[in-house]
Image (cartoon, one colour):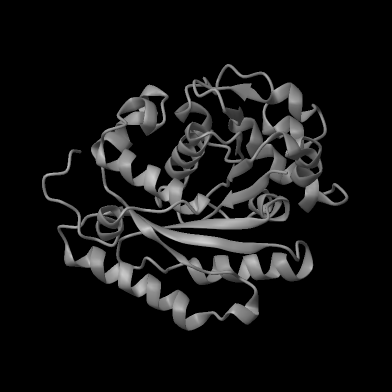
Length: 282
């Protein structure tokens, strides 16, 4: 049965949606059956996979409000093994409309369960907030992936997110664990990037213990700032289809392999830890 992973960070600009799209794409290309659920009213994961969010008739909004069945909404993408549950601005209303619904925190989970066994992985792209939509993602998921941007105040807001995850674990979803934390938008020409990587690794090694059941870890692979990664959504393509030879593409492939437990080469291990080659392609 499929593993359900929510990609969450209430802080904007961390590369959350970019990561949701590209992890889903590469894991599908590796041969796994993947469903990406767009749970963000901005619908950027939808448009980033080449679907016109202004033309879709039904979306995750209709799923959450019991106005459609999930198999009626799932769309194909350019990648054979990758399917999409799209979103658009309609989803904004779900936060308000779900308030009076019994078991509102599990609205998404109830819809996912019947189709879970059809996929190896189900990724949920959560909105940049800690509202009811994100709570639905955390209640439906078995684990959480957290992108952290390599910038000043990288850990700002992360403590609150971890508290929210803990509250959901204690009260709503006891099986929830942290799949891992990965660093994004790294600029290896600056000392700041190295300092942030060190700070994040130190934070998780000193603040948590295995007894807490959070299964915390910081992935080796670090996602760099990359022009091609920024361009790809404008063409409605994951980086694997837009420029598979770019540095950003290489890193998302490595992160996908790391998530799947596949080995990294020695060269990639060194580069993922910050030893980027100066001549690498944008």
